[in-house]
Length: 375
Image (cartoon, rainbow, N blue to C red; front, side, top):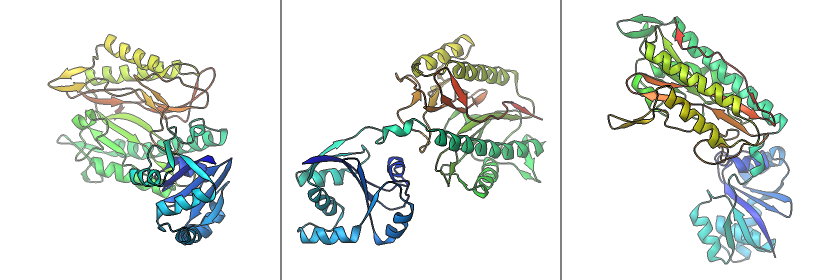
């Protein structure tokens, strides 16, 4: 008897399944890895395409295994097919991703298979980016910044009237800027899997608020965009903070503190450093600069999130991080660097770039100017 690794999920949802097969489909498909060999079981709907597109796997027909399940007196459903497959391969123990549905784990255990949770990510090698994957991420980040140019041009062209911004004769809204950015990205074969953030004023103090309604002059506007390449499936991710018109002095001071924090973090990043050390250095910098993190008016304000997260085939790619959690960065990791400060009185400020960790430091993957005021 031998054990094996098994995934039953949609590669559209499961980055490990796509990484292992380079095949994508909207429905759940079955992947089995045993003794260094990999197999995909596909329905008639996906079978021929899988034979052409999937990499490094042998393709089996789901219909054939459903017939085998019936002959083995198993239900021809997912649990019955998996049980029949495992029995045929003399497998009694399997390792599955932690995201595996409970009904599947429970059903297989009832059939006397031992089911254990695997590492996260299930394919741990994917957190170390190859030279080709690094190039794909540079491409994604450059495209992200091209969408920022679209947004900045709109803000630059907009007119200030009666406390609002007008663009092409209409009140400029978060929705309009987001639409123009995402329209551009779609035309470049990049998918806005998650809505871009275009949040002004108090909305910018909630880091994941995508923003809505009219944008106003003389206040912070956070733009955070994270598109995915439809061709490579790798993400870009960047944030800039803009102000159309004159920024108040306190907002300028807040912006300068965040920019210094990001530059300091990037200078500290290298293989072997603990991300927690960098995160704490930023916290101390903000405290010394007069920007404490505390409850104000019953709401937590200041630096209220981590400094950075891993990114690749997922927008938040565990376990890589720069935060209050112990995690040592290694050569080949790709991580965001995005300190921010959020105060309801002055607004939110965040700056974000992606870096590739090397033995002696890090490389910023593509660049875009950091400038607060847009005349």
